[in-house]
Image (cartoon, rainbow, N blue to C red; front, side, top):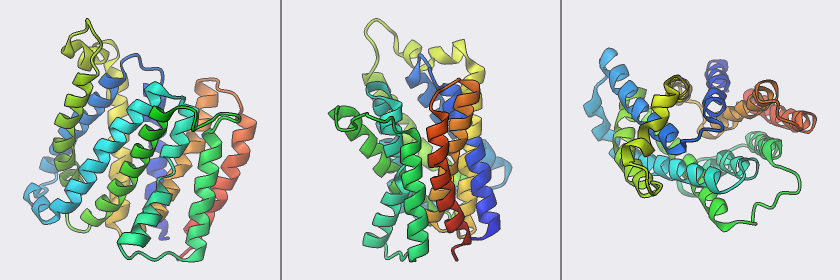
Length: 289
């Protein structure tokens, strides 16, 4: 892998945990996710206009945009449902196994080929990422709803990554993100509205958190936009989509460190051991041509 591409991915991974750290324990999860969606829509439009991007260029990649938007909807709805109805330490590792889905779909349907060294690196990264956040003794099959939701989010992340990597050969990042989120916003709005608690107005349900902690949501949205913009730039430079999404998993040990230092979470010793497995896979991917 080119060092420039690897550097972009590492920078994206370093920024990404800020969103989860900021939103962790949020009492208004719909506000958090819907706020991120709306902020990305505004930021991508502003970014595109400021850089003179051609928004009509998206017409040339509308199939990829449609697939990516559908994958993004699956991801948002799946992760929100899994996190609300299940244990994050059980289901989040499943969602983060997207590199496996990317490899399988790319090989089976898109004609992608992967060398044994790259596959070994992806496998080590996925195994390390899974056990980093998996709680010993937990049963991922114990509850049907969060498991299905996590699998939907996993599939959504995989197909979005493949579609975005393809679209980035033609369009610029803010154009891609603007049209995707223009589709995603009303779909998620409808879903979140259906989940409104009795006795709470729709406005309070969707925007209450912004009135309480606006800085947290702006930081979460801004940091995640920057992180994914760097990933799209790595796609633009021709980086292998499976390798890039494997390298993104370095955000997991970073989140473990942040969780231990800021949130005082336990089991850092066991998690550090699995982070070494993940790092070994990352090193293999970096040196693989």
